[in-house]
Amino acid sequence: MGRQIRQASTLAAALLTGAIAGPVRADVTPAQVWDQWAGYLSSFGYTVEFEPVVDGDNLHFPVFEMTMYIPGDKATGVKGGTVTINMGELALVDLGDGTVSIELPGKMPIAVAGDGPGDDDFTADLTLTAMGHRTIASGDPGDITYDFSAESLSVTLDQISGKDGPSRMPGTVAITMEGASGVNRLASDNGVTRINQALKMDRLAYDVAISDPSSGHSGKVMWQGEITGLTTSSRGVVPPEVNPLAIDRALANGYIVNTLIEFDAGNGVFGYADEKSETRMATTSQGGTFGLGMSATGLEYSVLSRDVSISLSGTEVPFPLNTTAGALGLGIQLPVIAGALEQPFGASITVTDLDVPEAVWMMADPTNSLPHDPVTMEVALSGKTRLFTDIMNEAAMRRLDKTGGAPGELTALALEALRIRAAGAMIEASADLDIDNTKVSMFHPNMPAFGGTADVTLTGVTTLLNKLGQLGMIPMQHALIGAGMIQQLGRQGDEADEFSADIRLSPAGTLTINDTPFPLQ
Image 1 (cartoon, rainbow, N blue to C red):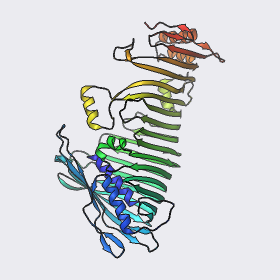
Image 2 (image 1 turned 45 degrees about the horizontal axis):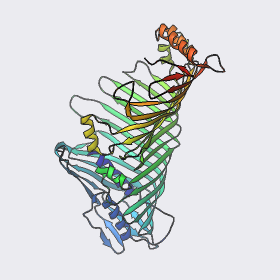
Image 3 (image 1 turned 90 degrees about the vertical axis):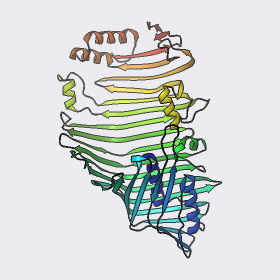
């Protein structure tokens, strides 16, 4: 039920920070704004059982409450339940010029409740504190824009109630936005809602400091930090009657989410301590990006931080570790909807100029025989696959997990780029593989036949192998064999220790390196 709670909280936050703006100025009334909200909530499966209090042309909501019913699963025996969000008091005020102000109190209580079987019941009580808040709705009933600004908005978690009743938070959980402004646009046509959003924020701060009140435990967790110069841009398409518990069907019906977040700088500290141990990690970065996209064409996720520093210390760490990196990043692209046609996928890892701490080098290279240059590893993969199962369908994926089946098959795989630089050596490579799922590989009966080409360049690798052998980090015999094979099969480059290879593998298992046959068995 936790995922539904997070989705519900996200939707509540979207309404509170002003649901959407556009460039066309026309007349819109509080009743029309409320009609749009009610339709939007209904499309996500929320039930709204209250009516606003009419005060002339204005609408007042003493309690803004919405509920989503969670159906049970007969196959697993899981009982159904509900998720309810109570956002407290707010008002829609007609400004007399065709625009509407969304009025919030300085402090607003928010309760998120999960009513499920057994121990799944709980209520989380939060408080939203707003300073200098302003949200103005304009446009027309089918295309409403929300201009939003606030000196600060903060949300604190005050209390969680479970099967044993309410319990005060043993510490602090808070998120604060400062200097926030943005514009959102929500346009509806034939039941389909299109969303465009842009938001700027001077500072986003988070503060988590809690202890474990359980008997016999004294653990404390601390996670604090901030992000500055944050900007976001998002767009989405919401078809009629989206079921968050059946996101695969929503995607097939046209559900789209695309978000890009950029920031100027960030820093954070994480710590844990109990009676026996203590751990602390601090990080800083000078900007980065985060991207998330989801549609019928696939799921895309990317994160990149630049000019990163990391320090780690604790009782379980033999010595303090301090390192820096030019960039750290991860990217994933996956298809999500089953179909007969091939679909693209991809993945990437970026570790640029990672400085290995000297304490680590002293353990690995006590004689200082190796260059202690920063380490770089950049990998980019792409390919095509044919999906048999919607991977966002949880029931179908559970069945595959029980039977040991595969959700699809690879039809092509490419190493777009590989670059590894460390200890004075560098490996660069690219490759393309074609996969024939109608035949069995000679390497393993459970693998399809495959073949393709690869281009590899090795610089300083034979020198590194010899040094590793001399240091005893690998057996000297293995080092000599590896270096000898590189020199024998590789094509000599411009430098003394530079070799390249043109590798070709046929589906039948014939391998050549620079046109020289290489036995595989």
